[in-house]
Amino acid sequence: MSAELIDGKAVAARVRQEVSEGVAALVAHGGRAPGLATVLVGDDPASEVYVRNKRRACVAAGMVDFHQRLPADVTQQQVEDVLDQLAEDPEVSGILLQLPLPGHLDAGTLVDRIPPDKDVDGLTTGNVGRLALSRPGLRPCTPAGIERLLDEYGVGLAGAKAVVVGRSVLVGRPMAQLLLARDATVTLCHSRTKDLAAHAREADVLIVAAGVPGLVGPEAVRPGATVIDVGIHRDEAGLRGDVRFSEVRAIAGLLTPVPGGVGPMTIAMLLANTLRAARDTGTRHGY
Ligand code: NAP
View 1: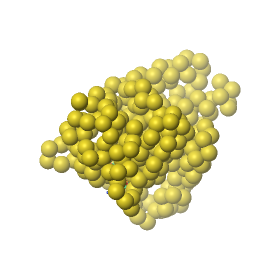
View 2 (view 1 turned 90 degrees about the vertical axis):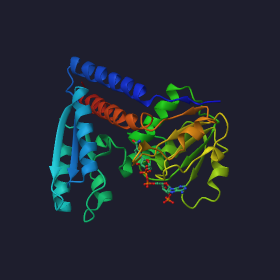
View 3 (view 1 turned 135 degrees about the vertical axis):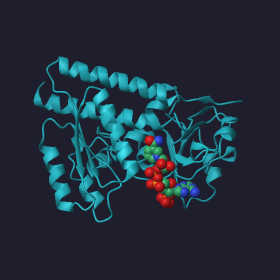
View 4 (view 1 turned 180 degrees about the horizontal axis):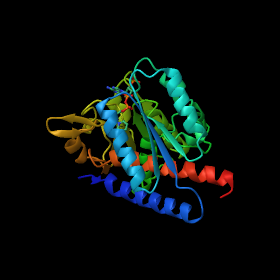
């Protein structure tokens, strides 16, 4: 058996097309074009690339790009002031504070400065709480993208056994909450889990977000399972994930490749969140 591959590029392109159409419709009905404010502190090269890609995608979708670049030695107060200004600005629908921040800044406090309704990364305490309580809110982009991939490929979640490897605030935890909200029976594994493979082998849906190259092989996969590889690692051979692709492909039913699986979904869902934030604000303002 050879797993069917999940085409994240194609699904992400569809989401981006839907967002572009949603933006055009909003503007055609007299609304203001959604605005995405990216805040980048310092000069971490990887963060620069991520932010540049987000800004380009936002413009390509017909949204307005508000970018704030702050020096690495900026003070906590200065970042707070910038976030407060963006929070007040009616043209800004979504605010994204690119992480990680330089060590002297308190990232948790700064993220929580973003109003939950503009928190397009879904990382504020308000949105984390809404997700935990199954209330409507903006969801973190990578797990929301995975949920969309599972839906696009008709993977049933109600009653399914789902195993998530990794419990980060960004991926693992919200992923587990999203799956729980869809009535899956969820196991959340982490670095202290005993016999990871035994847990993973139980999964109908296995989501691997450990950040350890090649952590999951065929011994940890139930034949026919859906396997989502969130990991991204660059080595001499190019990009690879947390899952040993060719070995697992021989046994899984559905599998995401790296690259071209989960990766493209993250920016697509950021755009979807920004449109949603703009629509929600517009609704409150009566247009
Ligand atoms: P992270 O913050 O480093 O968290 C990793 C999690 O995996 C932690 O909960 C850790 O457990 C757990 N873990 C580490 N080693 C493990 C092991 N041997 N067995 C079981 N669990 C283990 O990473 P992250 O931000 O969630 O990202 C995970 C991976 O996804 C990275 O490769 C990252 O680059 C990638 N990523 C991709 C996208 C995308 O758009 N495709 C987005 C975000 C992240 P403890 O909590 O016990 O330490």
